[in-house]
Figure (cartoon, rainbow, N blue to C red):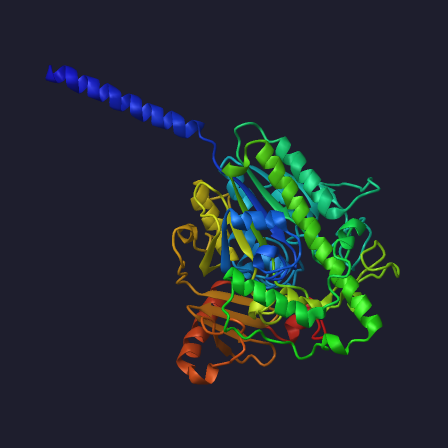
Length: 538
């Protein structure tokens, strides 16, 4: 009798294990939709304090978790390198831009030792797609399909006309052409608009995904990056909304940010004293500047519409709630005036927003976009390195939550691997592999304030930064002198407390030097400026 009972119990346990294994095998792995905006400021979307109409991104925030403090690498190509590889940009080969400076860490393309998300997820059984801006290697051997993506539609360099594929800046051959996989894809549609086209092709890719195979989709939109190009119907929606000027817009956004709980009410928003106050602009000047911001807002609005198209498709096919959606920007708002930049090609004198225009909205409006943070794109201050960051996945990501702790773009790869169970290969195509250096922040989903104990370091063209606990140190070339800010009390970096805390600076200097040695970071110099072609005026 006892033997009979034991046999019955053993059979039941065996059936339970087999059933559990079968259930796990049949369970669809989560999809990943990773969306990166280009040159979008901290407060440019509704859920981060903007007046711009962004209901779809705001839906992600309402149904997911937003980070109060999330860092990128302050500028486009280095941020993309870290996003794709989980490495600091120099370690991956993009210490400057997608240009070879002739030294290790500055090759201008992603090296083979640094695996991409495409390679890692393809190796893990995912269909891997990319649509948008590549900017991490112009030679064919470094293109997306050669770095793990099954399908690609987009362009290779740092900027592109939204209306056609004619050059808007100096660059390598084919750098502004559109590509489908490894071939040039001529623009044939008369109503081509780049943000729409990137979404169209992404939807085509998703529809072709084999049944039961999970997908990894990297949407690298280039909106709202220069040039200011937008559709007339989108511009019309913002007609007359920016007559209040940048000074009043900054204050209005700050009030909304406070109500949202994304900033502290006692923060002191830094004002750029190089800006002309709005009230001192002439009537004609105001008309010109208003139009620029109208077009910029229209570009953000259109970006949101296209994200809505992706969400609508996933929802209609029953995939949305099994898709982790992430939204972020590659750096803070852009302050350069590209209409006067030496790399720009001014094709005509078209009205801002149209195909002939090559305008940018410069720091006059960019300071409002980054409200209340200091400085702009390419800067190690918070305005250069901070991004809105949103995650939506109803099964495990809390809805409507604001995560007070901070994380960095190198943390995304390890987070996605932990989330999906995809493993990082021990070897890949015979190369020695750099392991990811970031930290998974999946615990941030259940913690009120996720504590990232490991410091974060930044460097681009001699501009350096270190985030260490509550401290942030910043150093600019050629002075190379550390400033120090207490981010808990002063995230707007308005009070340099370096003199009061020499012991903290000593520790930070040590952290930076060790990080630089580990990550192939060169000391910026006149020789490096010469190699880069990036003059002090740039």
